[in-house]
Image (cartoon, rainbow, N blue to C red; front, side):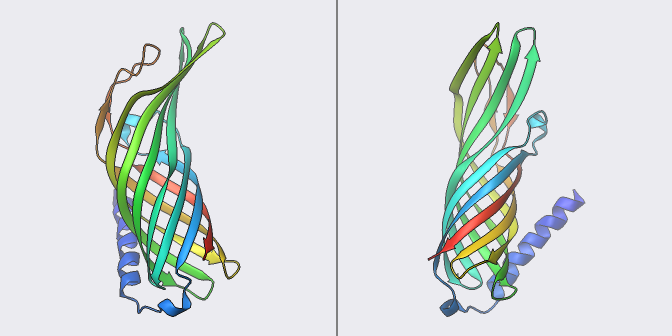
Length: 210
């Protein structure tokens, strides 16, 4: 718990410093697009049997100055749980499409490196899918349960400009969402619990300034 509080404090400090630094918008290309790929790791105790899954995002942003940017993004992330027994093997997957808005407070370290803190939120569209194999037969079902959750996040990252228009980066954030009760996915895989999508998202980013 102390570690989480410390990390959150550092994130807030990065945002505060970024917002307080003087603006120098004339040296910044105003718009950018960024493709992010990495992992999502659920931290909800009710999902402790669910593993680390894929996390991807496509975002477009605008620099209002060297120290402040606004970013809109969407993507996909997932986590799943495998189970086996006399019935065969089954996999339950949580699929999520986020639609989010992100504020970034930026600290330029030099002309090619920037450190940033971020915070934001949005809507998280969740649906479940199940797959199972038994007696040499394969079964799949999707949208057995679906809902929309509200969520927010804090994080930090770093970008390295490798050309005047291309940058690479690393980013991590912690996500919190509202709770939802999911149950009775299908006859193959029954699961009832109150869950949220609280978890860690970490990505490697490739961006383009324009």
